[in-house]
Amino acid sequence: ETGVTQTPRHLVMGMTNKKSLKCEQHLGHNAMYWYKQSAKKPLELMFVYSLEERVENNSVPSRFSPECPNSSHLFLHLHTLQPEDSALYLCASSQDRTAEKLFFGSGTQLSVL
Amino acid sequence: AQTVTQSQPEMSVQEAETVTLSCTYDTSESDYYLFWYKQPPSRQMILVIRQEAYKQQNATENRFSVNFQKAAKSFSLKISDSQLGDAAMYFCAYRSPGTASKLTFGTGTRLQVTL
Image (cartoon, rainbow over all chains, first blue to last red; front, side, top):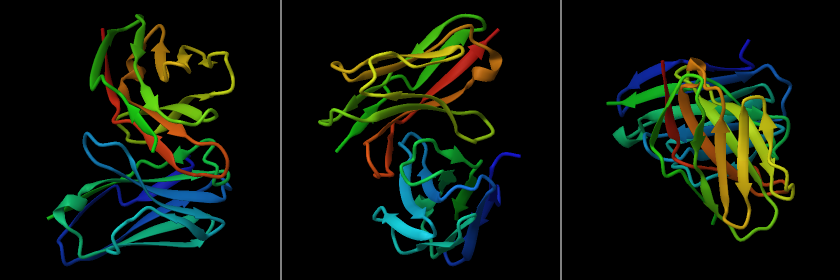
C-alpha cells in the first residue's frame, strides 16, 4: 500500500492523441498536486488542488487540463502535446495545502512522439 | 524568487561509509522550511528529513542528519553507515511558511553505493 497510486506507469502517445493520467490517494489528505519532472531540471509544480478546488495553476499550457472530482482522485487530461512535454509526471498529496509533508506516487513516464 | 542549488550531480560512497550531499539556497525570508527527498529507482519520492529555519538544532532521522547553516544558506545531508538501499536521487527543497503550497526543488544528486 503506497498511499498514492498513479496509472498508467508508462504512456506513449502521438501529438494528436488525447489521454488521461490518473492519481488516487488513500491517505485521507485534502490537497493534491501534479508535478513535472524532466531530466536535469528541478521538479516543476503544475497544479495544486485543495478540497477539490484548484488553488494554483503554475502557468501551465492549456493542453494540460487537470480535474479533481473528489479529494481522493486527481486526473491530468492531455491533448495535442508536444515532444518537449515528454517527462515523468508525479502526483502527490498532503494533509493540507501547506505541503508540510508530501506523499508521492511512482509517476507516469510520458513519451510524446 | 527562491532558488535551490545542488552542485553535485553524482556522488558515490562505499557501503558503511559516510557521505555528505550539498545544498545551497537563496532567499530573503527569515522563516522557511527545508527538506530532503529521496527518489529510488521505483520513482516514488520519499521525505527523508525536514528542517525548520527558526530551529537552531540540526534535524536527525536515524542515519540521516543535516548540517543547517542559516547564515551561509547551506543545508547539507549526511548519510552515515551507508546501505545499498540508500542508492537514489536526492532532492533538496525549500518552502516558504504560511499557506503557500509551492516547494522549490533543486536538480538532484544521484548517489551510488558501492560494495
